[in-house]
Image (cartoon, rainbow, N blue to C red; front, side, top):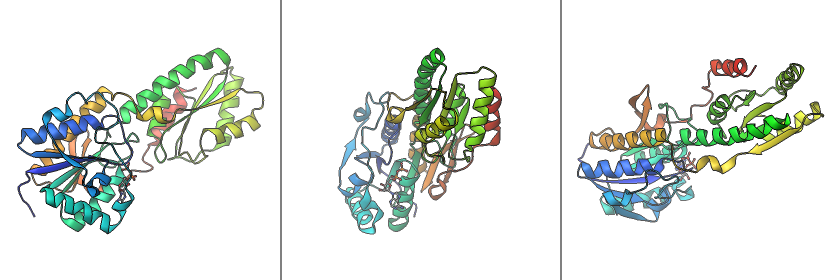
Length: 327
Ligand code: ADP
């Protein structure tokens, strides 16, 4: 199946994350450096199906490394779930002579790419662009560092007002399936409790810890909750705490979409640049249908179908650290 690749496509798909632009830039410039033609595909798999594809030059990606979002836009594309949709996508690529594509997205996008590459023998390379950091085979995903820093900045501000009022504050951060944003932002802001989907939330324990802190006159308490926590999110937690602690002032703040936006952090720009560069090298070296990750500060390539969500991998040690440091 090995053939010399001269024309490649790049797309961003699924949920957007800050740093996707830096990855596009790296793909385009590395491709051009090696003499490839690089084509930008708009709105993920939707643009593939609709043939919304254009040739990119070095200058096309000028002045984007510092911008959040994605210049190629992103979409969730229903038609790509069907064979007919994927066939239309392939025909557009074939007509344009595009021999391989680089997909910057989450595990859903990789599932689509695996299906596509199997049916049409078109090499796909995956790069993880997701704020949730929950993909196998990599220590980093593009956007996580920015998102977590945004959360930390917001929580710090809320802490200032908490301190003035002796309150319990429940802050909900993003993470439908993964608690990394909650865990990292919670530790970094000194949260007393962190609730994540990877662990069952036992409300009795949280109430006991709050009562114990009250006895010790620790009256300001911060609880960081991942949106996908099994207890049901910040408002559910507030409801139960209000019943059990009727005298406490309990406030909720949902951070929401601000966590996806903003200029990418230095780390996200660096990993995006590295991954984009290596994605092109992979295609050129005939390392097809792989996911390009970074593990222990080395590039790590795994089959694209193994780049799935790594649920439940938060170690007990982290939880112990939270408990000890919040005492
Ligand atoms: P993310 O990539 O952020 O996880 P999604 O799960 O929404 O986001 O996936 C993005 C897109 O990938 C979907 O809208 C769809 O077009 C495509 N996709 C996901 N899973 C499959 C699948 N099993 N078969 C074909 N396409 C898929």
